[in-house]
Length: 132
Length: 93
Image (cartoon, rainbow over all chains, first blue to last red; front, side, top):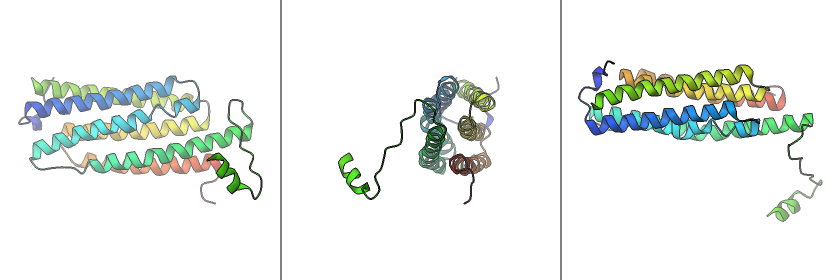
């Protein structure tokens, strides 16, 4: 097994920290995707890949930040852009996808989906207050 | 010693991410309905983004970081457009 050439002067603690975060991130991403294949219904499956977008991305971004910061002896933080971007966009896309799926299931009348709440015309504020 | 651990953990991370991409592709080819395929595409995008970041650590080049940023943005836009399509039947109304 060949070693990484440009990481020759990386100190031991940094190499161990980078290895730890790489293994954590990649392993959790794999576990999330295994769950995505194995879970039975779509509403359960939609939870599984978020393991990869939360701790998977976090771990690998952290490993990259530690690696390049220690190697270039100055703070390198532009990887955190990817972390922020993935953290912000994943809930948006998954909410849109889950709402689209709920809409399709209701339109097709599939069982096991909560029915749409009846809303009386002109009484929306009253319903909202009662729900509170 | 720590160099060996580092290189083996990079191999482990790459193998894990490639296996995760293969599982997402399996779900995309098998997935019973359209929303499963869209979610599998989103997972595939995220996994390939992480794989490119591990490549970047391995080779020590910054170009992989920019490529993974572009992949992340494209994945976001693609998933939003596909979810809109599943909801309404068309993307731009």
